[in-house]
Length: 217
Image 1: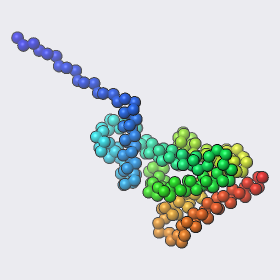
Image 2: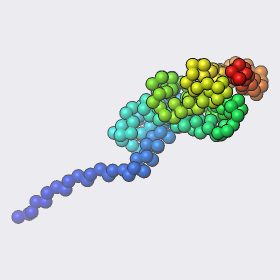
Image 3: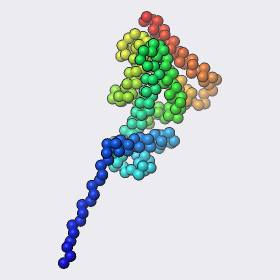
Image 4: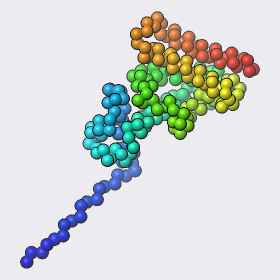
């Protein structure tokens, strides 16, 4: 009489090491970035991100709870890179007005060096920074805002959360983004001399703060 063998239990799925998990999560973010740059935000779907990696949808949801969470991670990487550029532009001890000029030049220069990224980053589909809650809870973005406010505060001699400082910080951002949007997005606008326009925008930012510095000095 033949002896019946019991069926072997199915093999347990292998658990990725912490290093492998981090690498796989990064591969999802990198694939999303590639799709963004090449095809725009609408091309970033969960299936489009996972298929080139041979990953399942279940694997994706282990790391992100949906497309917006993935886009938020992409945005966070861009902001982290920009934050490092801004920090390096004006090391500790740089005179306040000089630090502010360097900050404006670095902010504008970063996006001028990545024009396709700028056009994508400020689209509503990706631009998660627009909500107050995101600004409060995203540590990288919050610290970038705080860095700008500290540099403004150092010029005008007030605290970083003083109402005037907050308004001047918003003015710094608005002038920088206004220039960037004009030269990088409004391609039909006939700019006569882009280098001169850039210089005048930065000089105007600095002069605005120089006047405030004299007023409070």
